[in-house]
Length: 111
Length: 120
Image (cartoon, each protein chain N blue to C red):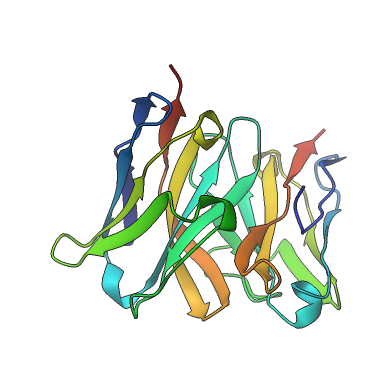
């Protein structure tokens, strides 16, 4: 059981918008620690998608955006493309555990 | 170009030991935070360990005492020494570069991973 809770799966049609939530607590997101998002295709290296709550690394399309509020965060993907089909993870630090933590992951299906 | 290449995985019997390597290029391992993250079959990502540039190391609570993270500056390589391996250590092990300050760290570059299978 992850301390960061994500929906197991989401789906949407090409061109549509989808959001993935990440719910934490007062010892991680609520404590002010940043949240980061990763895209992971099976058999590949995970890829940093969003860092420090809202920032996109160079090369990440602006179709990807994120927000953070209190104990939760959200990743939004607009203009869905078939290539977006992947697993998405949020990540932060938890002061109670003294550990870096990942959400359980969300499988995105592009219908 | 930043590149991370893991090696050293394989089939190991329960109770055995294994050392994973992560060869880095395009940056200096000892100047950065470096981490190991694993993914068990059918499961999500799980943080394993981090080595700060100042030499301090931290581990997931459940792995303390069995896993040791280290680096070799001359080889620009990160290591993970694993002992007393158990079936639930079976996973793909990724190394990743960390960016940030103390606890606020994200992992901006990852390797492709190396598979460790613990089975008799």
